[in-house]
Image 1: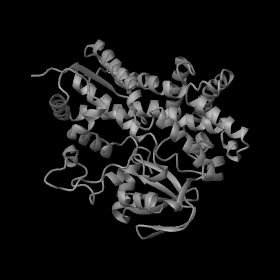
Image 2 (image 1 turned 90 degrees about the vertical axis):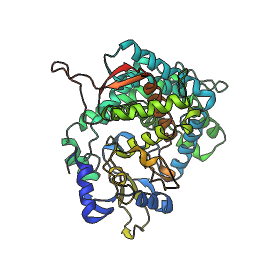
Image 3 (image 1 turned 135 degrees about the horizontal axis):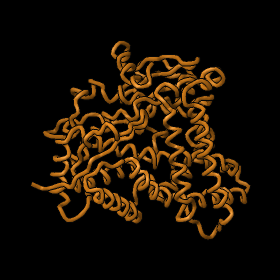
Image 4 (image 1 turned 180 degrees about the vertical axis):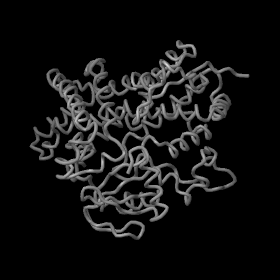
Length: 448
């Protein structure tokens, strides 16, 4: 399998063997789930058979072991319940009305920064990383829990670590991978070093938080975590042992990293599609003017009134190649999926690309067509993208992420017309293999 072509290679295998097939890597049996139906059956209908991730040395396990992603059983339930409650209270699952002001201010700040460039090429991911950092830092670390420089170092190192996670490097696992494969894979050593630097930043921030902690004044998520652990220990509650610094650091590593770096590149990928399909800019802009008007920015309350904008977002999710495959839950109890026997110990692999290009679910799946999601004349709407997973182990930040996508995308389109910059041989746009880094040429939108 090739890093850059793995989703196409697996798609071709699917044409021969069907949506559900298996392959092995370093002794681990992987089950390719290449349709929304098979993913739903495994993660929703038969979720009791797939409850935790593979606990063997691999790239993801090395970085996130001990955090919520790799916890299982009671520790996972306890830590997930705590974080889910905190995310809800602090607007990290959905953007709560009383907390929406800060994100609207951040979006407007982005518009102001872009306007100052006056059509010059800009590095959109870098701008968005800065803006998304403000939102996450306030929710998790409060006003003074982490400095701007610390968060900047965190994001830089997180980007370095993510760049080492290629399409194929996440599959080798176990003793063979630990000693004979991973040490020799390109970027693995650098990825581990970056992950260690990230953990150091988080540990220092948590240490400072503990030194100034006041149980009567909970400032942020970190304080809430400390308080929850202390309360349970004071009551001799046995689950207090799950509230460790390791669980906090390894969970925040993913939450903060994804909430800033991944979301920034995710939003940029939507803007890149507008560059590839300029006609979509005008359709979205026209709808925004009709529904929102010219005098204000779009709000979350407008979202349900913008069917074509929502259809565009869904279609970009479906066609996005930023995140195509992902090895996920291990089978803890033998079962069947799509009629095939899944033995205990097999590991599911979400094949988002294959599921989203499934001709059984989508007419002309290779064609970019947002209108497929605009329901007319009682026509059945096709499957919505499954990019954030399904069931109990689905991504808790889906609502938060997609609300940010909607607000940034709609507000930028309302204010600007996006164009590709004219290529300069001496100053080319830098593009990273994964994730990608693009420049956008932004010009003021003119109503003709």
